[in-house]
Amino acid sequence: MDQAEKELYTVRMLGLKLPTDPRWVNLAEMDLAEILTDHAYCEQKAATSCISLIQGYPDKEEMVRELAPIVTEEWGHFRLVLAELDRRNLKLGRQRKDEYVNQLLNFQQKSGSREDRLLEKLLTCALIEARSCERFRLLSLHINDAHLQDFYHKFMVSEAGHYRLFIDLAKLYNDETLVRERWQAYLQEEARILDGLSLRGDRMH
Image (tube, rainbow, N blue to C red; front, side, top):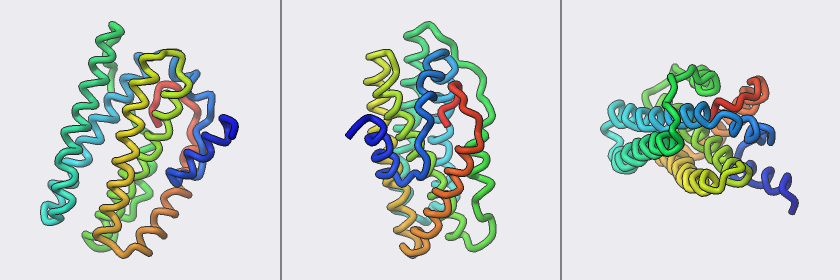
């Protein structure tokens, strides 16, 4: 199996319909301050999303128990990226608009029951984690910095676990057939979104 086949295999394992353009890693490493800044804010927003789910659905006891440690983990990731910036004498820049995530949020069905809206939120989180996992894997394999290769390998493993957790929670609170159908719709939309975005090395997504 050559490298291109391995990349495609990883994408399929995550359910993603479209692999990241291989040029993305080269663009990302041209300005590490930019990609590390965007990564830091992604981790911060991941922690915030979990907090929001807990606040909005305190009655979902299993979800609350599962997400509480994820909040701590994601904030710890934010601190790790800050430490990496400090290690390289780089500064945390300003947060930028995340067009990828905003388009995914626009795809969410806002009508329906409270449980329907929970499904939309969980699948959105799962998809963001899956794409992050794929991109962290690319960095861990192809960035020309041995320290960052190891750094991003650890993030890749973590994101893979988060992706599976959000899918499992979606199945816990919804009919599995509905989850499967809606997940496929999200995957198709995500591929369309990614295909329409310009290739930028200063964005994690």
